[in-house]
Amino acid sequence: MTSSEVWEVWNGIEQRLATLVPRFGVALRPPATEESLCALEAVIDRRLPTDVRAYLAIRDGQDYLNDRLPAGEILSTHRLLPAAEIAREWRFWYEEADPDLGEKYPGVSMDRRFVELTESDGDSLLVDLASGEVYFHVRAEGVFGPLAPSWREWLVDFTKRLDDGRIVIEDAGTSDASISIDDYNPALVSKRFPRIDEYET
Image 1 (spheres, rainbow, N blue to C red):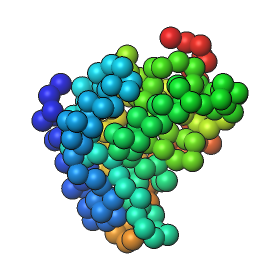
Image 2: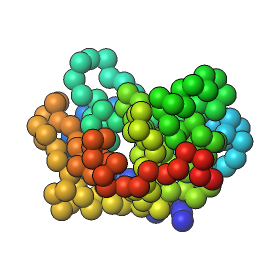
Image 3: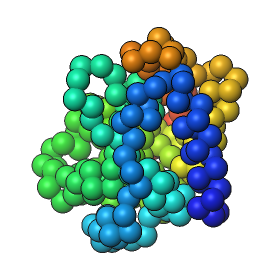
Image 4: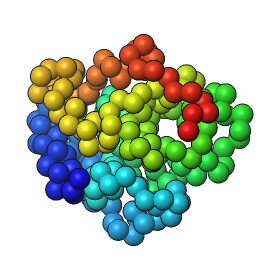
């Protein structure tokens, strides 16, 4: 997989959302620097999956916007995390968190296999560092999936859903626009994807 392949998919998403969800582009950060990517890889002690690294080199996640309106998240309330925050979340789960949190947030803390690419009050999209597969963490329930064989394939599927109407965009074209996908509604994820065993490796 080449960086240009990831750029092509991502650029298509930005173009589509420019009018549908105007604040999506406003919240996007500039590309992650090579220094920040290397710093993240030093924290997780391995190289990022190629497509994740290429994506971060295009857009280093999203910023919070300083108002009460939706920030144009990739999914409703799911903000794309910058490399520095991905590292901070990884440190929290695997180096700092009280082991008892494993009961409240089952799955994420079971080993060092995941990085979080989005965050939404405890829910998140995860990437398996070994396989590259995308999973969904539902707070207090566990990790479900895989949703896609890779981050790039998840983005390709996201694009297809935009084009065929399977993505619901409320208040499209306005500052209140938000994105929702039924399959990724936390209340439905457990019914549509298998829960991975807490100690699976």
